[in-house]
Length: 118
Image (cartoon, rainbow, N blue to C red; front, side, top):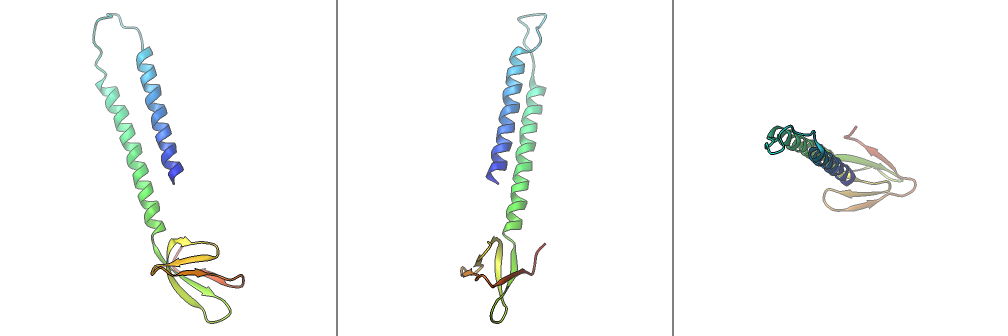
């Protein structure tokens, strides 16, 4: 997720650098002393940066929310099946960390079923 944020920041920095370089090289003015009002261009660029940051924040929030969803996991092994409540992000290949803080290490013969999920 950090790479997505860094990539977005890189794109914003590139757009800002291109905008700054083009505004310096811009078309020649007929009157060299006349001031140029560039508020609209500045407003558009700041709006674009704001929209990108808002989209990134919303995407990060939905990712965080889906990863912190509590799901039921059933472990089927040598004995009776056992059900645990875990956060979605804490389900690893052979290790689970339950909501109440217990760490469950699965054996090679154990099978894992995700009950509440995609």
